[in-house]
Length: 528
Image 1 (tube, rainbow, N blue to C red):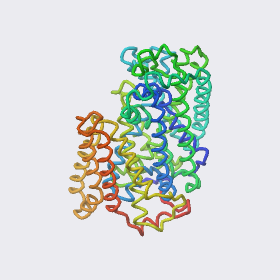
Image 2: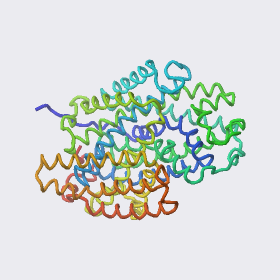
Image 3: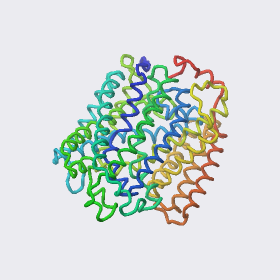
Image 4: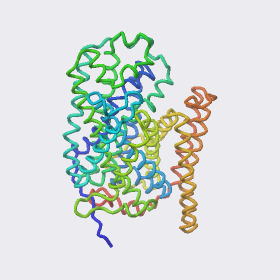
């Protein structure tokens, strides 16, 4: 039998915070500003505020979970602990798809911005990569693989430098654009020209939630963190708060600095006039130096985020494999480096695959955002289930008012999934239901009947949730037939999410004795 190594706890607060900031400041800050304003007008600022509040609520929940059960690949591990391997299978699959495709999304964004200097990388008509563009993307992915192959310490050192630069450039952009700020832009063609629907749609499909996805890598590498009970909550809260403030300021500066001549036809054409928002607006304002810096950062920012997801994805695959619902082959850790290298090789293959069929950044963000938010939505249920089954489990970070925050966070995630639209919801959740059915049949053929029955009993609520979301989306206002008018759709979703939340918490499969024995206040005591 091959000897298996262990993760090395080399990451401190600065490293983990830079992972969060670096993942959040990826491609979204470079592309989302024009997309958001096209969908919601100046009211797009509200989209960033709402998105920040939602992610902060979920962040509080992850703080409690991450401090209590600081395990590598926690986004997959938490539901396995609370509801068994059937849900672990679904969460592992959806997170592997989301994380590996995020690597590709970031390199696609780098290539699109690099085309400002090297137009031969991108087809001018379709915005898809040329042969040179595809090679450019593959070289970047291979570089991320190289950075992550040796050790987590090397990854952290590289990421800290890149993330610092990534943070400074948006600061320069904010300061420069506010020098051209025109308050009148916020009332040109109405402050909220597309109503509440525009704000809702921009949160899911405009890149807002996609921008805030960076808290999951913090959880994914929790098994390699020094003093995780303190470090994880601090890193989560610092990165979310800092990023929310920056995104609100960036969107405000962008809206206020748009020259009047670009607003003559309203807000709906802004994304066509500013394909590369901060680069193009800098040129329109005569700030060539700023456009130059933005292009440099536009290659570094997404590449930094892509590197972070190249680090996080193998940890997700590892946790999925350790759950018993994926091939055990990927649960091995290299003895010398402390890296799950088999899972890293799979991540490389998957990320290269995702560069093949999708021509632009916009094509993937709605799907990936929805997939990731679905995995976020499980977190409040996991935390509530642990509170119910293990009330005396050590919780170094305990969320106050969880009886309100837990259901509210789950409802908020449910709304974001709904706002992503019928096409995304029906395809993504429908596929999850199909895969669940296949996995149940497979388990019936390979496991004993009692075990399968227990797993189905603790996971069936998720399928009810998926089916209900598909039904509401079909009758809803986001690509559905529009039968459910506002606020009726909100009322139905609120009642439905509260029902599912209560049902899921009661369907937990927690063995309280095992959980308390495995996880303690001591960072050295948790089991990787």
